[in-house]
Image (cartoon, rainbow, N blue to C red; front, side):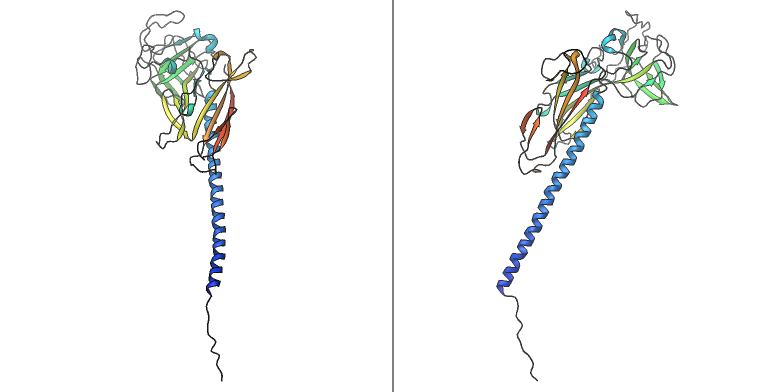
Length: 347
């Protein structure tokens, strides 16, 4: 019986090299797909974060801007002489730009004050929400004011009380909510960063503060016919992020309490919408650095440049348009310009 003794043979060197070349092409394709998917993910992730940040920033700003100049049923611009300021203007903590709601404009822009030549935006008015006087306040007041239960008020808030005919502004040293009633106290205390209330004593022209105790109010504000608001002075600015990572951020300062809102907002530009013919609609939009009569400003236009937190999202430096000008980005971050025009409905 014959048995086959055929020798076994392996792959030749040429076959191995061919297999390696084919494998190399396959691996190259896989790597290319991976890199493409990674670049797409980085772009999509950066774009979605920018969208979220931009919309959040604009929503925060426009909410405050719409409250600019709102003082309930009292028109400060027409009836400022009927508003009594009880804040202590002689206090070391008094700051007219922050505490004077009678003489300061409801909206004000400081050009090129922040990072990247950004504008600062200051808004003055009341916070959203109000409370009604729940117990008639005699004339003069007794150092405490009771209003319907409300969580809007905090200690040391600047308060406006009005009956649509006259108004008083004072500092609520304490705000206590109990059994559905908020009690606001007003004394001559001078807390840190707040002016406190002045002690007028005798009757003043048009307003009678005929005791020198607890900065008493001068009107008999009646229950359910008078309203109380918490006033705010809010400034938006572009500053370095609190984390110290070198990122720019949008900051919001409310009554001198400065807090970072969101990182990645690189620049803010504000234009004044000026009404030259008195019809209530802006005829032109001017840079905040231009000479503008603030009494003619009926709207503002806000531009925000929001950038990605990572560099090299794009293959090359981006060119984007900001307020009609083409800007060449200094890096390969993704940037988007958000813009909104807000009417000053309380002017």
